[in-house]
Image (cartoon, rainbow, N blue to C red; front, side):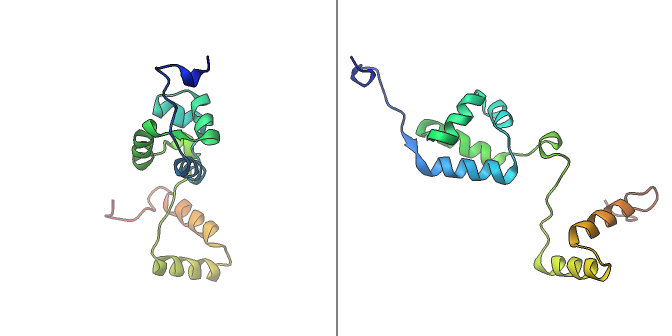
Length: 126
């Protein structure tokens, strides 16, 4: 007798869009299968299955909620962070970097290093 013929067998309903969303989200935030498995309360093998065959419909809401509320720990992002400047801010920073003969990433890192020196940070700002 095939598994599908058993009276208690309920096949997993897989949502194809969720698989693509999960892969894109993990790649964008650099979430490892191990980190996701730990926070989702599943095994690493389950995360790999979700990435290859898709996410069962019954798990989709929980996983989407987890994805929406995810905050990365410093260990999982390798000490990096994301800046989201306005277009005007980015233009200003880019022009300043060019004036200094640097690319904007190097200019920002140099500015942060300089401001982080003892006694050099912005005064009166938190």
